[in-house]
Structures are given as C-alpha cells and as structure tokens.
Image (cartoon, rainbow over all chains, first blue to last red; front, side, top):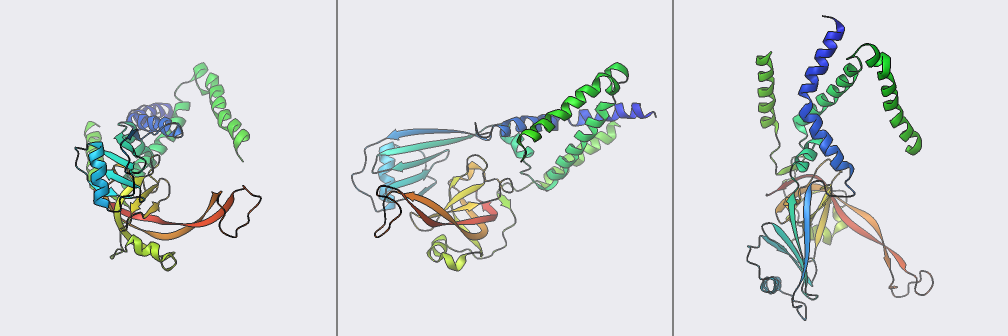
Length: 185
Length: 150
C-alpha cells in the first residue's frame, strides 16, 4: 500500500472515531475557558426573603428552627440543619438550602440545578473519573496528533502542504508563538 | 472489519462499567479506622497539626466553581472546618450539601491577615483611625479521601 493511501485511511478512520471526543472536549473547553464569567457546572439561583425578625437570640436550636419554619411556611421536609452562629440557622431541604438570620429577619434561599451537557462534558474533560478514562484521554490526545500530522499530507499539489497549505500551517504556528512572546514570563 | 469494531466498542463499554467510580467516594480510599470529633481537633489544634485524621459531619458548603473545598459541620454548634483539596484532584459536587460525609485528611494551619479598625487594648498600629492588621490562624484539612452519603 502506498504511504499516501495509508495516510488517508488513517486520517479518515481516526477522524471518525474521534468525532464524539473532539466535540465533548471542545464544548467543555469553551465552557471552562470562561469560568470567571459563569459557572459551567451548575445553575445557582439565590432569592432573598424577609420575615418578622426575632427580637432576641434563640439559644435552643430546635426552637430556632421551628421559628424559621413557621415564618417561611416551609412544607418541605428538613433533611439537615446547622447553626453557623448564634443568630443564624442553616436548613437543608430536598432541593434547596436556606441560610437565615433570625435577628435580622432575612433568609437566602439557594437552589442548585445541574447544567446538563456541560457538566457531563466537564466531568470527562477535566478527568474527574480518573482510572480508565485517563488512558482513553491519552489515546484521544495521541489520536489528535496523528490526525494533525496525517492532515498535512491529505492533498497533493497547489492545495496541499507544498502549495498553500504551508502558509496556513505557518500562521497556526505563529499564533501561539506571538502570545508566548507577549505574555509568557 | 465490522466484527473488530463491534468487539472494540463492547470491550470499551464493559471496561467502563467495571472501572467506573462508585460515585460517592472521592480521592483515595479511607484507611483511618477511628474518626475524631471536629470539636476535639479545634479544641486542641496544636496536638493534631500535621496529623492525618478522619472526620465526620454534615456538608454545609461546597466550592461552587471547582468543587475544590467543602465545609463540614462540627459536632458542636457554631463550629465548622473547611476541607481543601488540590484543584482537579478531587471535585466535590454541590449536591453534597446537607449530606453526611466522612473525610480523611491532614490537619494544618494557615496564617490569615485580617484588617480590623477596632484596636485591641494597648495596641498601637499607626495613626488614630488607621486599621490594624491582625494575624490569625485558620485551621483546615487537606482532603485525601472522602465518602459522602448521597
């Protein structure tokens, strides 16, 4: 088999095999790239509500919880509770967390929703599963290198690497070099 | 060719199921047998500095962005401790909030500088009205492994 035919077969079949992983890593890459602007894993909603403040501290935890429950008219079952300080109560419901200051009469209700697709892609991209996934990710990375190299030699002539292709490759090399010269310390 | 491809896909799927994580365990397997109460650790921090401990308590908060820390309630009111892990090494999910967790890790302290406008008695730190910088110790646990009842 001629080397160019083998090159085409490799590029085509590895390309097919890596479509899903490339899309997963790309979606997560964009999501994680903007981590300072948004939360790529969760949609967090916070609502502040007010209620009649309790005039003095309630030393007993159960009484403090009962007071808050009566004020907020909570119907949901309380899974857990905690007192971060003498004026506050933290309640954990099925899908919400409530942090309330009884003396100020103010409560923050937080609900967390998983950002589907992004969370799953981030889970894989950031190698949270570890174990076998580490090797899958290594194979994917190696596959991308093979794709890049075989991609150079897909076409012959004017449209190939020897023609206009080399200028595109040069441009692609220059982009990281320019940024390294500008920002790398 | 189709036969090989099919075998490959089946092998990958079976291996994935076999090697998949349990979903409730994070990081290394917990090896410490006996747990220590958080209140006991915070009551005599110098005794536990640098030691590996196993703590248990309700998860109060989780790092929203990277899942790189979680706050565990102490057995005593008004008291909690933060478990910090290396970014990306362990990722705690936000669903952990309100659930019981067992965490194994190394107890350590960091010095935190706090700006305070109220001068302590006999304290002079600059002109009148200027703030004082107080150095306080904050105690944390470097998380190695955790199990969350989710």
